[in-house]
Length: 85
Image (cartoon, rainbow, N blue to C red):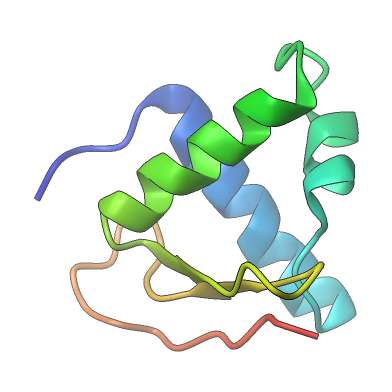
């Protein structure tokens, strides 16, 4: 399994924290607002694509909050935090 970059790890942890705190995954705009170092909104999509290809999340592209966390950054197995709303 490929390792996460620093930014991917940060975004994944932010998504997990939002799900735990609010019960839903953040939107792309909310992720973008949290990480001003990610200059363009479209780059958030690339980070999410990378997390999905590395099997940390699943995306439901038809939903605004369509991210399902499959596993945390330090977990080798599925954790099933459902985050789509």
